[in-house]
Image 1 (cartoon, one colour):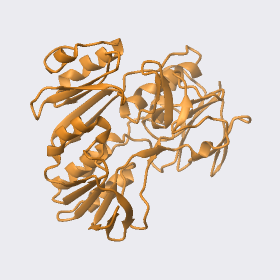
Image 2: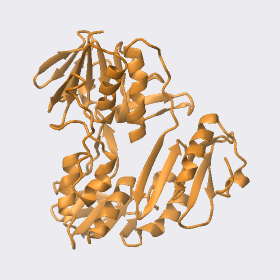
Image 3: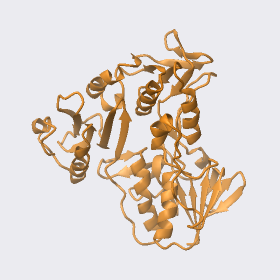
Amino acid sequence: MTRVVIAGGGLAAARTCELLRRKGFDGEIVLLAAERRAPYDRPPLTKAALRDEFDPTLRTDYEALSVDLRLGAAARSLHPAERVVGTDSGDVGYDALVIATGASPVRLPGDGPQLVVRTADDAALLRERLRAGARVVLVGASWISAEVATAALARGCSVTCVEAAPVPLGALGEQVGQRMRPWWAEVDLRLGTGVDAVTSGGVALTGGGHLDADVVVTGVGVRPDTAWLAGSGVELDRGVLVDEHLRTGVPGVYAVGDVAARWSPRSGARLRVEHWDEARTAPETVVAQILGTGIPEHDPVPYFWSDQFGRKLQYVGHHSAADTLVLRGADSERWGAAWLSPQGRLTAHLGVNRPKQLVPARNAIGAGATPDPESLRDPENPF
């Protein structure tokens, strides 16, 4: 093994560089970053970076690691037969390739200006626009929109949020969403309302009507950056398909982070985990295989967090529509929610201002615990 190429410029890419050197790899490492800045953390972009100027750049020292860091050099094509990645500045050969190109925000139709929050430049532009008195319209009552709303309100903006679902954060289900509804009290939250297009002065609503806005922020999800892999033989389906070892079907090609749709033996499903913890841990599995030290399985219990409206939310696991919801506690400020599979196994847990429940919940999910549903309603009872 003489050259490892990493396509992508986020946390997963940086971690792969660090681990390769830490584990003794002495060959070439080439990192192809689409942005013209070194890899950085993304969670602060909708939190600290919207409040103040904040540098999310990771502390990885690429020079000390002897990494050939190529900024503004996005991967454009892949040719596995030749083991070559195509870029705007020429082809780059590889012995092993790590795909870490992440995902891009979904944008709405229309020719009006709309902001998203995915890059450091996105966050800086939005922070500059969040001025006192600005009329901000958020499309989608999502995790990101809740965090943007929190920052916008703190800066004295008036905030309207348009959401097609009947509750905010609809992925958590209607009962959980209803519990969160009061948090949006300072937001003009318009549920069951869709947006047809972004206009020059706001958004055109489905079925008629228009919302005027100085700032429109779209937070309706992301799509994995896989267009450059078309025709390569790498199998794609809402991400790069990989097994539980993060291997694609093409020899020597792996995928990590937001772009990877990995098989989870625990869940019996394919997961695309778009969270910081996934990008941090997945490179361990890939590096072991590149170095020939093993073929470990990557199937951790997913975890992410959100700070919104003065509350800390921590979610672990992965639940499906078939799972049963158990609400934990009646305290409006400190409560939780658990999901049980049809077989009674704990599959996911949400804690609201209950940080001490994170580790026990994650351990219980990992162990395949089957807690008593009635006992579970009391948030003080163990899993």
